[in-house]
Length: 297
Ligand code: ADP
Image (cartoon, helix red, strand yellow):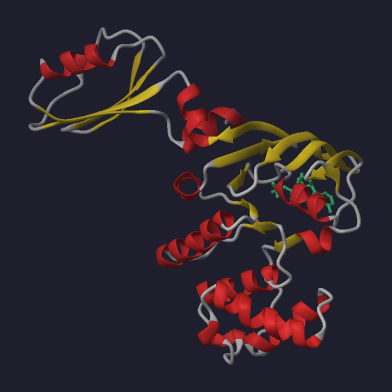
């Protein structure tokens, strides 16, 4: 378990972290969310020891983290740090040796990690020749070559096409399942909703929403109902239904927001008075809605 407790960091008059507290469970893929300027990068840098917080503590397996961060953490920064003209295996081996592995062990670790990220066949290619998705794999290999217990990634999905997102997401899920604790930041909420069991949302340096996504969704009072009619219809049938707001409507689709005490049966009965109902979906709010509510804008 990675525990972050009361982290504070100020840059002059700017408060970047304002008592940030949450835990990251092992074997879970955790999405770190927050608007621009929320403090995500500062938080990750504090975890890695690249920024010294003004207060608070980071604990791993119950003990405060100190000088052993380099060994325990793997980091994939947003700005890619690869050498474009160097060959892949040579590059990964170089970073392995920088992390302290002797030459033979670095070579062995390189072969192992390239296999792990599905890039064995790229060993002799130059980084500049690779697609963005494959460069990401190599960047991940560099972050993993010393076999860290905790992997921290800053916007790892930025710029990847949908196929690249799927492949990279599958890699992170495998790593988490194998026991690595994985925390990554992202602005792509649909992707985080799809991939992560747990999320942490920070805003203005504080945690505003954290926990298991399903539980957070269940705990929210309101629900979303989408009604699809067989024939064009209006929304006149919704008038008078208590605690309901029409969010979106076109000729056959109506999307409604139901507050806690509204009854979906009642809504369905009302919809049927307006026409033949092809589909009736009753869902908890999406991560995007939870996020908007938590950051209040
Ligand atoms: P995020 O990654 O969520 O966008 P950051 O951690 O980069 O947020 O920034 C949090 C706040 O701290 C912002 O207001 C940012 O301008 C400020 N900040 C971050 N790093 C520095 C720095 N090195 N010097 C001054 N201000 C900084």
